[in-house]
Amino acid sequence: VVLELIKKLIKKYPARVGGGIRTAEKAKDLIASGAKKVIIGTAASEPLLMQLPKNNVIVAIDTKHGKIVTEGWMNTTEFKPEEYINKFDNLCSGYLYTIVEKEGMMGGTDIEAIKRIKEVTKNDLTAAGGICTLEEIKAIHDIGAHCQMGMAIYTGKIKLPEAYASILKY
Image 1: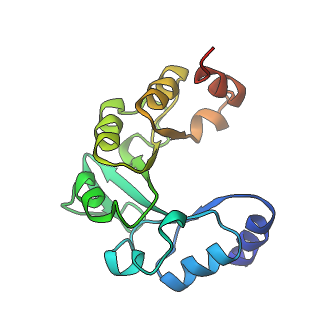
Image 2: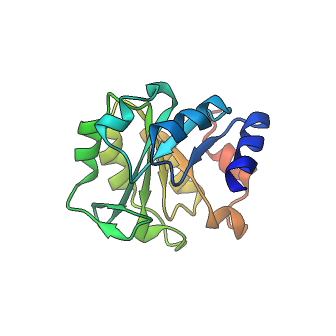
């Protein structure tokens, strides 16, 4: 039921789709159904990514205290995000980098960590986790990355027009 709803939405609206995409077949089906990008997290591997069109793939880099976490953030690995980038940079078009311990906390994000990740990749980078001020949005934009926000928008702390205006160059 959920997959069918997602397919209806991506036929009508351009979207990135992620969460539970663990096979090349499911990723290809979502792309064929209209997903602009698929986000591969736990299942990210060279054999899987090599089966997919690079321009339609984002690799999720979820970290907790600097280590990659998988399986819905429940499994902490010994891998650092830079290792994932070195492994996957030629197999994807970008990354969704989530600083898990900051996610939903409204306490700010780690701009320096985002900057370090952006310096390692030639690809697109979207940062998530704790972003809650216009200053952070601008700093992330100045690094050359994008923001993905949740709680700051849901709670009204940041208004989308203000967020957009904060990155405009006059």
